Image (cartoon, rainbow, N blue to C red; front, side, top):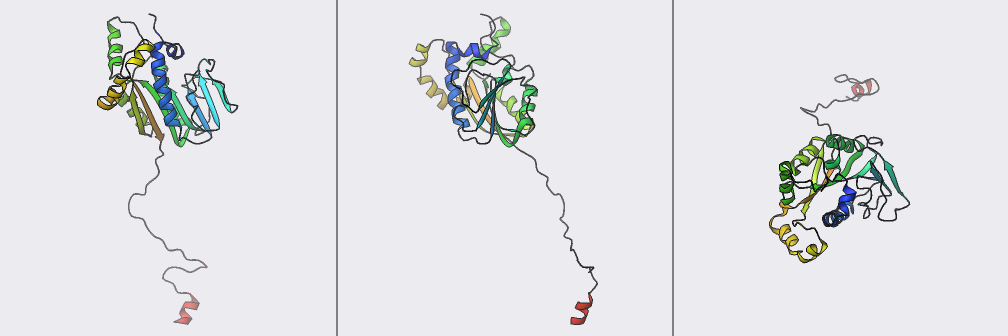
Amino acid sequence: MDAIYDLDSFYRTSLGQYCLAWEQNEFDKLVSDCFGYNALQLGASSIDFLRNNRIALKIAGDREMRNLTHVPDEASARVRLQPETLPFESESIDLVLLPHTLELAEDPHSVLRETARVLIPGGRVILTGFNLASLWGLRVGMQKFGLPQFLPARNFMTVPQIRDWLQLLSFNVDRGAFGRYGWYKTNKCVRHSAWIEKAGDRWWPQCGSLFALSAVKTVNRGVFVGKVLKKNYFFAGAKAGVKSNKQAVKE
């Protein structure tokens, strides 16, 4: 099997549909309470992961724009761009979605830096990816012994690694989820093995094959260090320690 670098082609496979159902459900939950004026989805332009969000302007950006699987809203926009160099002003976006964008990017660090640049203070980034601490991650590790690539990614990163990158860029990770514990290649297997999803969520959640992280951009504010000096201000020519003529007469 040829290496799959195209996320859109992967989503058309049985395994991709298995992933997409979980990711769409997680995005629907995480974006439902996000508000603002502008929302941006970077990558997977054929899927509307912003469908459950009420932000007025929704932008879908990708290297190669693909046909949407739904009828787009009148307020939506589609832009062909490079995720490493976003054509948006600094602090102009309220919400950014990264569906496997870091794994497919040529420079994932630049994608995160650009995301931090365009997000407003208090803005949110939501991303998904493949978890290396899973059965799928073990299968990825076996590729160096000659097994063919089966997941659409150039760089595989661990969840702690991504959390560290986000923290360095002043993001606070406040939500997250793991999912998909089976290994299915047909829809029939998915229907008959739903029990393993419930068992995985309860007994080994961190071994899910997929993960979703949500983080808020924080702004460091200045803090006074040392003793705060109080200074008295005198007006109309009065000075400290010097009595005015009216004060002297009253005494």
